[in-house]
Image (cartoon, rainbow over all chains, first blue to last red):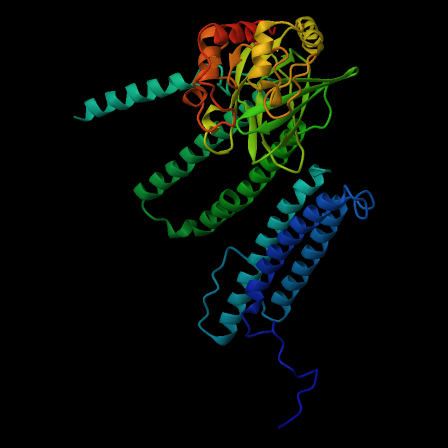
Length: 133
Length: 323
């Protein structure tokens, strides 16, 4: 059995794989969960001192938002480079071919990236407005 | 038949509109916070009506017109701008506006601070003053035009503090403190209530929110801070002590210092009995003592059915003098 090297091992997110479709909404969900955790831990601990007062949780939530959006941008680049995804709305992607299907997945992945990015911004906004528990 | 149905719905609608009036009316605009929420509601309602009309109008138009395949590009652009870009911007703007509105309502500063502790099923109210805390219950008096900061807690289960005409509402959670700012604009006796189901007598957990002119409020608060004037040999007070009322209730200035039930130091100065339920009259007071659970089921206070005649009258007379 040939040895699988690091270079030819199958990538989870690569042309032909549909995992790219769930990646961006998953980042959105994880960011949402982490935002709640950060706020809950900050509010629970701010009274006892070890975390509260050291770091304003707003900047943690903004940082998390920035990291999440950076990850989504990276996914969008993969969708464009490896899937040939295009962010178009004026043409239909209906080729009944292997390449057409891949372009379709890339296209949907890009739309989901945009949706997830907007959702993450909407999650960050309350963190910017409210500066306490 | 159709006409009859229309008339019936019309009558029901007008009857339902009657519920929009009165001391619990959140559209009365009696407080700045309620007025801000009212503005938000109005703009959302009108905006939603306009958008709904446009969408349904477009659907009807599309249904009646013949298809124009040559207009596909325009149609796609219309869907993108009208169905994606516009809603995202609009919802984003409404989110920011609503958040700043909420931030104002949950401010942590005010001209005066009132702590309210939700109990089953009444309200322990404490005014913070430079000379110390002033404790009362089941009635909250507020000065017109000044922002009152409410620091809310609960003793047993989750309650929610709501004076619809003034603003709110805000949860009261055991183990943590929430805040709510209210700035009354209109004088009057506005209704307050618990807005989170909290057990048996939840629907009977009410209070009066009395908005007074600032001078009258200061006079009231100074009076409320005073201890009760009770003679040691007052026969009504003797009945109060003999029946063990002092184990649960406090009358400041006497040996009655029970922490369980509402503070009774100025009981008769309140407009209502039983947490915003009954007019403060001797008849209601007598019935409250002897037939408590018929007037408010499930509460901790036991009824005293054995009290009657002159002994009951003496006790009621004493309580009605606690002004």
